[in-house]
Image (tube, rainbow, N blue to C red):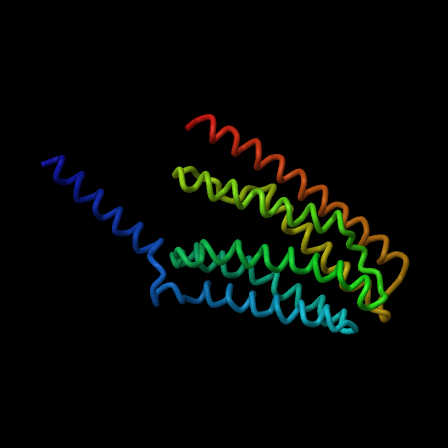
Length: 214
């Protein structure tokens, strides 16, 4: 009788898990995932605005709105049990598109607009390289059934990157351009690079421990 009950409970838990992390069906198009998709659309609008140049304050506002929705969709998904397979794939992908894309286009803006964004080639390389490497590690570890979800260091890294990009966009506007803002921008950019490298090292150490425990 006990074995039967345990089997029933196990089946119910499995069913609940499948419902929570279900396949890519119509149920995956819930509110959190729609917000995530809207963030991706905002990202491409942002990149177009940076490429065009001149709308730096509007670009900063748009970037802030896109970055803010990252916390909103995650909260809604966890709070109301709407976590899906699509969301788990799409959310980190969109985050990387926004941040890495912003660094790439701000780097290019140095040449195309004649206004310095403060973003250098090495900064862009470090940001993109870190994201690619950690994504590869996460893929390997999750295939082995190990938990390699985002940690506090990764969240702090994301926050510093967002502040750095926002400051870079604002610093390119003649309306608010000043030596003080340019200095703050440079500090935030280097802080973002430092936290990007630091969180990458912490993730690698964590991955090494998980791989040794296999």
